[in-house]
Amino acid sequence: MCQHSPPGSDRFGRFLREQIDRELDSLRTVRENTESGSGDVLPHLSLFRGFRECELKSRLLRMHLRCGTGEGPCDTIGAVFPPEDERGCLTRALLGLPYSDRPGYLPRWRP
Image 1: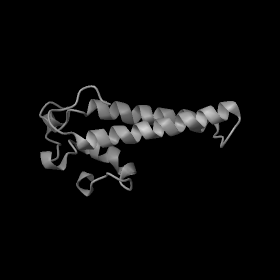
Image 2: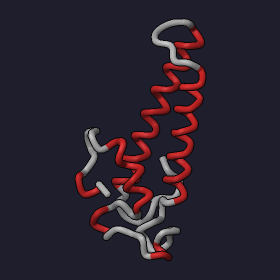
Image 3: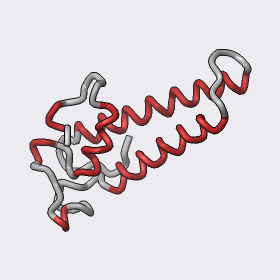
Image 4: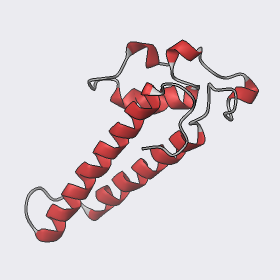
């Protein structure tokens, strides 16, 4: 889970973190299968890219974790969503787009 959660509920942040964690678990499983020679094998470059993409998403989420609370980087430029939308800022909303077809994604989180 994220280290510094904004006050109150951050369902969208938790949802995003869970999706990234699921991707990481899948990548680890594929890497283990690749190393052991069992199951599906992805090229090393695809695995490396997958881990790097998860790292990018995690860093962006961490950077924008406090957006929408008045203490985030986007709050100072006025680029936030209303608190009831739970998105925080456009960056967080865009991070959620790849997961919009997954259970738990709420339509109000769509940018």
